[in-house]
Amino acid sequence: MARWALISGLRGDLEAYEAIQADLRHTRRVDTLFVLGDVIGPERECDALRLSQGEAAVDALLQAVDPGHMGWLAALQFGFIELDCALLHGSSAAVDDSLGPNSSPLLLLDRLTRMDVNRLFTARSGRQFRLELTGGGIDSQVRDLESQRHQQQSVPQRQVIGIGAGVRYTLYDPGSDRLDFLSAGSKPQQRPRGFA
Amino acid sequence: MVQGKDLDPAAIEVTLTVRLIAMPQSHAVISCLHANLAALEAVLADIDQQGIATITCLGDLVGYGPQPNEVVDLVRQRAIPTCQGCWDEDIIEGLNACDCSYPSQLAERRGHLAHQWTAEQLSEESKAFLASLPMSLRRDRLLFVHGSPNSQHEYLLPDMDAFAALERVESAGAETLFCGHTHRPYVRELREGSIRVRQMSGEPAGVAEAEDRELRLPLRRIINAGSVGEPRHGNTNPTYVIHDEDIGAVEIRELPYEVERTCSAIVDAGLPPIFAWRLRHGFEYAERADDASHVCER
Image 1 (cartoon, one colour):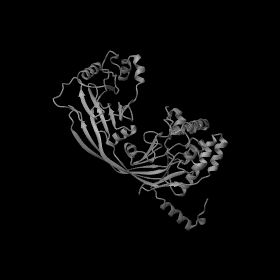
Image 2 (cartoon, rainbow over the protein chains, first blue to last red):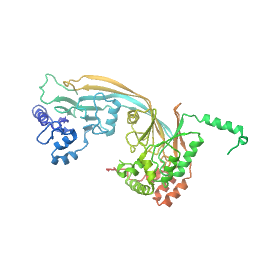
Image 3 (cartoon, each protein chain N blue to C red):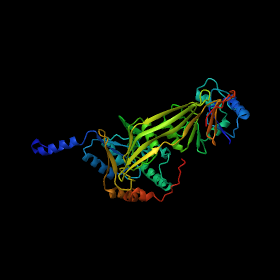
Image 4 (cartoon, chains in turn orange, cyan):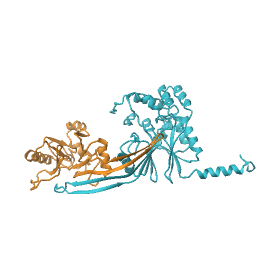
């Protein structure tokens, strides 16, 4: 079964991108590469970007991008829906919504529910993590002018996954639900990493 | 002026008793007035009759109805704390402020006609008042909004996902959320909630180490006031709610008003007659056949 590679937070770091590409070419079986935003940034120069030194960050960022790329950047999608997965930079609420290991489970469930997906891959926090909603429920009682209704709702088994940033990236196998958190350029480990 | 000798002691006693019974912690919440003066007058008279002095309005003072200035004037005259509704925002900011407030393309076209007419009729003073309205009002742990804490345009429907509904209340730091916008009054209680999470961190070396935790969710309530001027709950009567802060009781009140007075004014004003027809018959019948697949891309 083919796998997805999920990267983000390159911020103009061409070396990091090349390291990931080399990693994928030599050691990983990947059929699709998804880039979840923050391709450009004011910190580093690369062939495609020009950076003005000593300016405010936003100005530097604008200066760093070739005008020919501005239209392309502006046309980028908010995210991708693949199978039952949402692949986003932030979350279903906003592009700058930062979800992390310590985010409220209620918030995580809301972000999953907004897009009605079972897996939400996010990059904004820059961290690698997997949070699985494993159980729970809630009682709801609605009264209106006509009737009173009582409902019990269970927590669906869904996950939010942080994919990392820069050289830290993630592989995902949608067939087996296996995740691997990786760092480009790191030596192969003696035992398998990740979890199914 | 009433002279002392004219006062009937029995009447004084009755008045005092009514004031005491009226429970000082009771307050009324109204929403979605939609320039319907007759309906607003009927609701305010009913609130006064209950002896309730504290009223909060959840916006949408204008739109669809024929008396936008009169309704704004009455709300200002009564000094009713009010937050801004989607129509109030759109009249000030232009229709682009709207995310997607219409259930169909036909309803959207009618809405645009009402928007244009209302924008032409509103005085600069009324517009300035609508522009000054806050997005939300807060009183202790009670939060008052038009749609949701996120947006004046978001519908908190009575049967929406319970966790998502709770998230709207909890993220806003409230215990009870008062909203409108749906034009359907309801009281929703969310209780005994919990979410269990298993965390598997990928840091620092990618080794899977599981950690389980459980979040116990607090009891929260959403109270929708319905609509004064454009009821859509299957009935033509205005609705509003009375909330007793002490015991948490909520009464959804529904009352008749002079609907023909508003219908005549709609026709006389040159607004689309369909607005009068649906006030007379109820929203459900007017919009049921519309295109349900419409997706607004604005």
